[in-house]
Length: 571
Ligand code: GLC
Image (cartoon, rainbow, N blue to C red; front, side, top):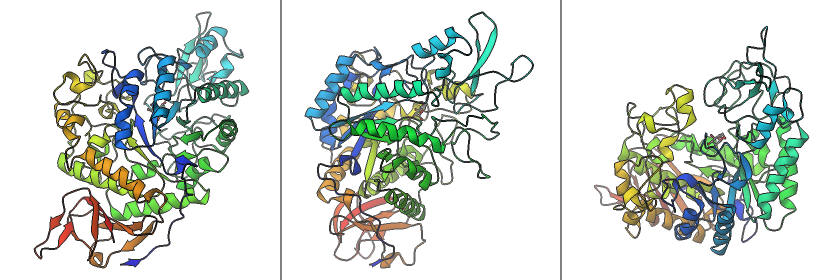
């Protein structure tokens, strides 16, 4: 076994301090986690009652998608009051009880902050509409005059991420057609004007409100979008995928250098609180060096590594992305994060079962090619074991511990993601990864809540994936996650020195076929993922600590890591 690449920098040790450098953070999507009152929508008391599940699973912290007052035009990412709980999710007292219970259980709580836009039903936006052009109320948002003879054309050609134009014209208080406001997402999500100090003060008050209630941090929604080019130039490129354009021009609405000052001031606020409160950037930014700027020492603590999520099933590609992204974050002293699924992408158990070369979809419908379920399951388990062995912090999206596949045959008439309607159905949307969780295989609604109602339909095969079927069942995906999380701690993988290795037996294989690295406190753990079809014979004398699939036995009687599997070995 030869080491072939320089060792990546080791994240700072974190025994009790800087917990976020190594934490496994579980994303709860409140609408779909657990329903306590039978209305078919998950809620905060439902989450509180099920926190024991997360302790048993073995995660360190929970990030909750928004549960604030909202008309739910974008499933709560359209906030009408940042400092209250939507009745569908409960009350502020329920939020306090949830935080208190989590802390009793040793779990940290990260809440979502949506600073790029509010709901159009927020009092600030209502006041802006009522006050008219030129008023301080309007200056909280991005209102502009339209182009054309009577302002009938939008101020720029920008498109909404959810499809259609990014500007909406309003009717002025006197009844005449008036100004336009910017909404990078839905029309019901007007963008705030972050060049206005009033906006900064108001959102800083929101931070303090939740910090005072004891939360451990914030996941910052669309962190790369808050500031816009004040000249508002046209941008003839699609707004999504939120990157620089092919010719290298930077977009006027994403990842501008002046956004960082906002995070520096937030960091000062967090640092003034007791304990270790954290900021996590949701920033769809490339290349890795641009993303790393968000986690410089005086800014945020972590940023989601979406490049890793988007990487194809290939050893060479994974090795490349791990090396590059870890180097970029290490350069600024931040941990790298790893993530495979969330509420915006097709679940990895289905994504990895799509034919090679399929561009990453944001949903799958019945009339599209269906994923290979068995292949997707095998690869998802392998991908997860690989991810949980990497140094740094990892994110787990609710239900992936059950190996949940995407709902890929959801009827159009129940879909709720605004992207579906705004693109006339051209984009399937993200509903398929947001289906209520199956807790109990033989209960109505698979045990999601007391009434059997679920706000999105559960596919029939979810009964097979229910927690009660998997709990205590050797070889189940749930037990694999539990074992992996326990061993990750025991073997100190999160602060391990990762070093790539070329196994002698792989010399004749294609470069993207197998990935192997050593890690752990003494470098004594060998992690091997077989991406190709050919099993990999175990190195002589290797002890298997954990494997995502049953070992194969070759004709010569030698045991092997099978295709599409990851093994953790004591070398
Ligand atoms: C983020 C959220 C996504 C939401 C969008 C607009 O990308 O993760 O769910 O639709 O921001 O707030």
